[in-house]
Image (cartoon, rainbow, N blue to C red; front, side):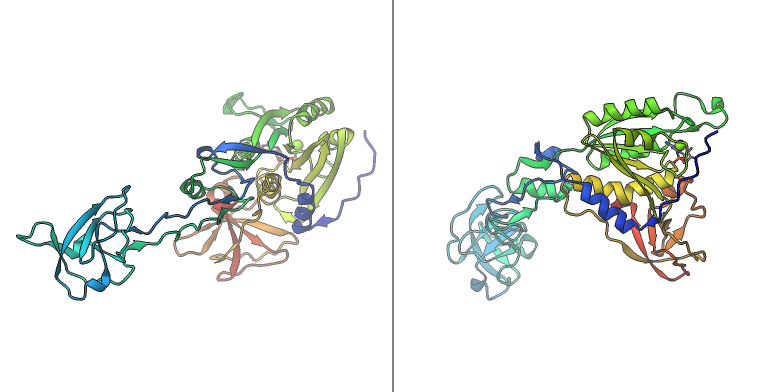
Amino acid sequence: MNAAPAAPRPPLRSLDDALAELLTHAVPLAGSDSLSTFDADGRVLAQDVVSALQVPPEDNSSMDGYAVHSAQLSDEGVELRVSQRIPAGSSGSALEPGTVARIFTGAPVPAGADAVVMQEDCEPVAGREGFVRVLQIPKPGQWIRRAGEDVRRGATVLPKGERLTPAALGLAASIGMDVLQVAKKPRVALFSTGDELVMPGEVAPEQMRPGAIYNSNRFFLRALLLRLGCEVTDMGIVPDRRDATLDALRSAAASHDLILTSGGVSVGEEDHIKPAVQQLGSLDLWQIAIKPGKPFAYGKVGAAHFIGLPGNPVSSFLTFLVLVRPFLLKLQGASELRVTPVPLVADFDWPRADKRREFLRVRRNATGGLDLFANQSSGVLTSAVWGDGVIDNPAGQTIRRGDTVQFLPFSALLS
Ligand code: AMP
Ligand code: MG
């Protein structure tokens, strides 16, 4: 019925190009949130965290034992009086010459002491209450944690743009920070397109009509967005109709930073995303030279960014990881947008080179090499569950068993 000639296929563009252009649109969100340090895991710092004190605050003991002045201990087995007791949380007084101080882990080393002998290397002196025999000649500095060895006063312990990890929260707390300034959460509206899609729970597996499939993309996309610190509005499945698509886009654009969709961005397809986004704003359809993946759309609807991912589940999953992930991190002002590949050895042959850069689903094996999932089709989501990462394989590249390849672990890509 519609006899319009097929549009010419746009040229494939490289992933690096596409990412670079996409990132030019990712202007970091204005403003920041003041958040309890307790709640800031995974968020991106909007401030430099600078220490007003040194950590540890003073030299302290890293052992339970005796603080000594090492020069006064030239012989093993010397008997010395225990002149004071310094538990953690208290501060002792200067060490009396010729004596030792009972000291516990974390307690400040008294002035005049320059080493700690652990209690296992000392013994009480029978018949001499309050005396200890030191069985080891200590080296100066032994078992002492130096003041400021962790954090110097005035040091930037966490720079703006750092994504907070559990360890980073601990470090911030160690310098007294109970509140942190973090980037705003990107507000993301998510919807799927496709009349074939059915939500799990709405129709039982045995009742599914021919041609229907369950909406799987919605589940992993939502989870991926949440892991990246986004606030997600799940708008469900939008029917393959122009008016429904326009309505969904309009209502999402008003209060979101990003509208993310999956499906309906393949070239030549009867779809409503493209004309609807163009009617309300602007849209570029990109054919990216990656496999799986390829179709990808970027545009604007009002002030909101629009990103259209391919419908095939593995394509959707991977284009999210290599394009949307850095985009969302940049919106949050993150300084590290990329995942560093790990060179590992392939334990398989991949004799058919592809014209496109490929992301092969693989798994590390017991000998540290990589096994390949047998079915690399863009519809086979099992590959992404079985795998613990992907090989980033350049276009035109075959792989022979024993070759070193570039591995991107999901543990890094999914965080
Ligand atoms: P499309 O990009 O709309 O042409 O879809 C490509 C393929 O992905 C088709 O086989 C769709 O049925 C499938 N697909 C699209 N969206 C989803 C989804 N949300 N969940 C699972 N499969 C999907
Ligand atoms: Mg579709």
